[in-house]
Structures are given as structure tokens and as C-alpha cells.
Image (cartoon, rainbow, N blue to C red; front, side, top):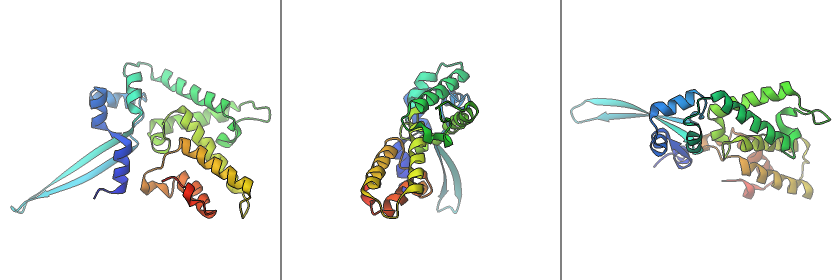
Length: 226
């Protein structure tokens, strides 16, 4: 029986060899795109050890490494295969993040609020936040915790989890009807952007630590996304 974590990864991600075959590029080309930060690195790496023995009382050990990427990697390869300007791609990515942030109805929740009372940006704070998001993206982090692994999903997840944390701070001991409706809406918004995480990760993920726990606290287990 295959481990549930391996099932999750194999069902939802695409392995390195399949990537290069589907995209019709070489392994060297894919590695160069990753090194140039034109394509995010793998979200999951699986190392397996295979031991072969025989009746001749011998043995042989094989180490196998598999790298799994978010499926959006295929579109990114198509977009950036011939891109000779990684800095331009980075700039566009951060500009899209910022645009999505500015246009979000709940933008004040993001990054500890990078807006003042007049909704003017603190440029230093926002630049630091966007640079961190870029690094997480390149390292494959958002291929793990967002459904779409793009600028919209990153902002949506950031705001959704900050709104849930705010809800936790102010919630009643026993939910009012209005709070129940608010929690149901927060759950729906979180689920639009955020993945399930691999089973071994879930308990310590933002989903497990906050949302799942909150729904269980108020006997709303039927709303927990499986």
C-alpha cells in the first residue's frame, strides 16, 4: 500500500522527468530555468532507498530522488523558456503582487498592514514583504500551500489567514449567529486559495493550526475540507 503522503504528492504534482517530457525540454534546460528563477523549484523532493539482495548472499543499494513541481510549472516553462531577462520576470511578479494587494477589499489585513490611515503604502515595509514572497515562490513554497501558485493566490491566502487570526482574537466563547456566518465565509475564502497540504504537514500548517482547529472548537467539522 502506498503511503497517503506519497499518494497526495503523486496525485497533485508533476515529477521532474514528466515535466521535461511534457514540456519537451532537456533536464539541463529545466535546471537552468530554476537557477535563473524563471521557474520555481520543486515543492516536494522524495528520496527513496532500494535494497536488492539475492540468494547469492549479495546486495545492492540504489538511492532514487524524485522532484515534484506544482502543475503550473508547465505554463511557466512555455512562458519563460526563451526569457533572457530574469529580473524583468521578477519585477512583473512583484508588480502583480502589489496590484492584487492594492485592489483587495480586505488589504488592510495583509503583512501586518502596510497601509497608513489614508491608505498610503509604507514602501519599505511592502518592499520587504514582496521580496520575501518572491523568495518563497522561487523555493516552491507556494506550490505547496496555494492552489494556483500565482500572485492572486499568494495575496488571497495571506489575507485569508490574517482574517482568520483576527477572528480568533475577537471571537466569543460561544459563537453568535453572525460569528458563525462570518466563520463560514472565512472558511470558504480560505479554501478558494489554499491547498490541503500533504497529510504529514496538515496539523502544523496554517490550515491545521488555525482553521481546522477553529471549526472543531465550534463543532463545525462538516466544514473541514478533506
